[in-house]
Length: 271
Image 1 (cartoon, helix red, strand yellow):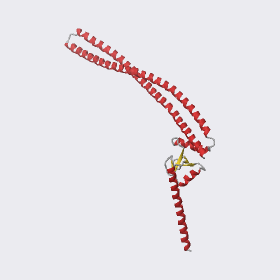
Image 2 (cartoon, helix red, strand yellow; image 1 turned 60 degrees about the vertical axis):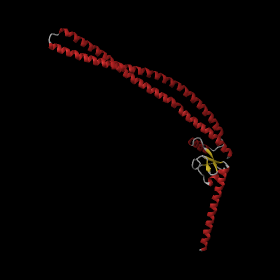
Image 3 (cartoon, one colour; image 1 turned 45 degrees about the horizontal axis):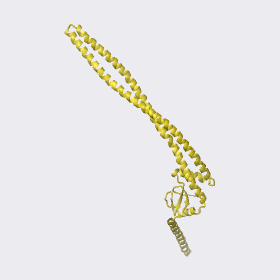
Image 4 (tube, helix red, strand yellow; image 1 turned 120 degrees about the vertical axis):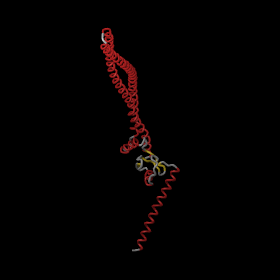
């Protein structure tokens, strides 16, 4: 069994590395996915702003046309001043000119605001376009990097599989299956020593009989607490603990046997 335990310890390193590489393979595309998502969102934002910009330009065009018309209307009204002959006509025309002037000023104010808005949108679009170009370069670079890293990891997996195949012969397939699952679920540790009565995987105290079975090395024993494969490793201080506890258990068994013997004799006295 010692030879098998040694192979399992070697296999443990290989399997732990294999699972680590598999996790890395899962993580590699995620950086690219994040950059692609940012690029997609950036393009969407660009299109939305571009639509606003085009709409604002149309509104700006209409405002300019309206302002031109308002200026013409005011100028016509002002020219008609020379033609009026009565106070009533003068007052009506003066009111008309004031309204035309107010409209013209309002349109000019709206026009200036719309021009500033269009300028801001245009600047934002230029910035967004530059950002999109940068993100596209990053996605391209990350795609190449991802392909290179995946190729390296796949080659590494092939090498690890070869080592795994070299170490697996001579180990029961059921044990191999359990061992692989334990390593995957227990942070890469599937076989641990027992020091005295303590499992070094979970540091729980094991029953004396189980430790005795582990020491015999007649069959595989799994920790009832952490499920890892156990093998016994002699450590001086821990060995004393094991021997002391074993003696206590034997004494308890003997006391139990003597008590049973006394009870039997007392019962026979009544016969």
